[in-house]
Length: 452
Image (cartoon, rainbow, N blue to C red; front, top):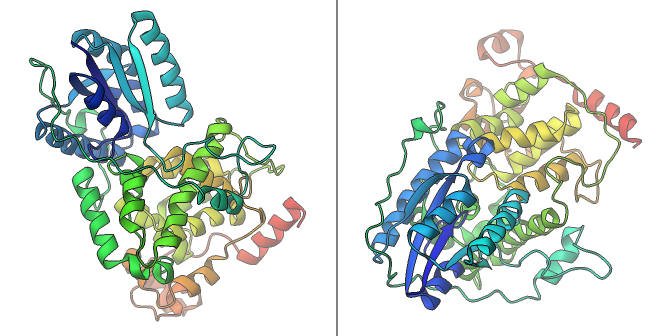
């Protein structure tokens, strides 16, 4: 009897899952499995926010599979060793899995391919993590697109593959152990953010439906409104594969507001194709600018804690700590402040985001950090996002700042962004720090460091 092991990674869903669909179509029995990879558990993936989201997603996936006649087999250890052990146990002659582009995923796939070759097990990998696979479109004379707009034009010429339905029934092997998820406290001693979004495919599909029906129509005009909360917040579900980018695109297509939202999906593929060609991107500058970053532990800690004295920056950092999520405009402002105003290494910022964001996709996280630091794909590498101008434009009445900095509640709409201008008596009662850096001086020093 032809049996397949479907090895789940960052694709925790049953709808539009090419590897699962192919296994069900091509094999008589299918065993879905997931390995809690010990190597990943020692890195940023071990953050309590991402572990919480992962466990909830696995619980939801297990329930979806049981409704279709199968279950989710859970193992813990080395991903390749455990996958081969499970394949032997259920006597599978093939392993099906989704393609991925991170450096670790590529290394894991190569190791798994060698192990499968040694044990005469077929390995089938199918791309299901993006809309356009890295390398599917390349510029003339280049390996990948280095600037977004030409990539966007080329990307749009490729119609997306059709969205696959979830299998109605998954024939499986009897006698396999039922999934027993570990408790969060057995994986980390730290607690997750208090307002973390729930994980899982069910939550992802519900969120997508609400976004399309209630928010997408005003997305173009409202997505930059910091207080308006008019973004999709689908990024963690896309990162964990609780929903596919194809399903999101299909649900939003033909609706008002679809094109600017489609560009955001394209940005995700753009970063993936850059990382695929430059796997050193998490460590090395994409375009070196000769930066000699300052070392200032006190300023870095103030930034992490949301205590820089600039409310729009601090509000973003407090949102991150509270929700494991940050509005994209706030990410840009906070990133520019760290790298251009404080002149601290973007890698420190990327590491902090990876530790807290539930959507910390390595390609997008590192790609966006390098973009804002001026070492990546931005065509204006010395662009500085002045926090005061950003605050006045995207949070004019201070609603976003007040949401996350209640200590500034008493200040007027305009005054909430510049608390240092309040009277000395008012400032003493705020319990909010003075600015840790002068913006004009920092901008002048950046021009000197980078020659304009």
